[in-house]
Image (cartoon, rainbow, N blue to C red; front, side, top):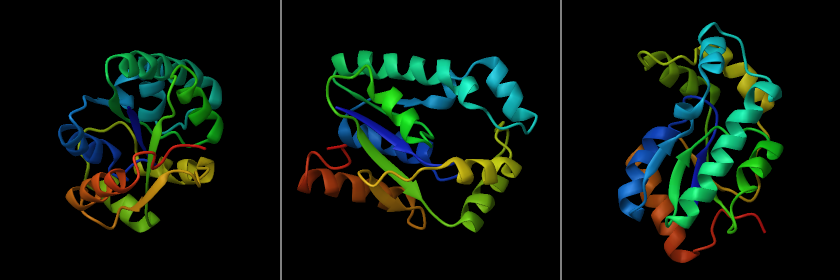
Length: 169
């Protein structure tokens, strides 16, 4: 069973994914770790990625999700901003991915991004991510106004209630 914790930069997807992994006994992977150096450099200079920039990265993540599914599943933190990106991520998996969408107010996102140290994604790029974001109606949507621990508890509770929660039907 694969999970994608998604949302714009600063929503806490990596933190939530890291904390969710031991609760579900699954490995955690951060999608940012799979970006090419060219993509990292581009973002570090404040230039948003294009669909062409993201294509190879998304295809790599889709292949990894297919591998992780065969190994019992994993949790991936990935922005997955557009539906076509999510389709690519799903493309190499046999079972539906579980989507957890972390959403919240721009002011809180900016505050969190401003508090991060050493991350290549600058807060001035948040507007481009928010403009690109296509919110998935099928995802388990949670508010980032909760703590990461509370969000993890909400995910675990939702799964206990409905094991297919967050899948695209």
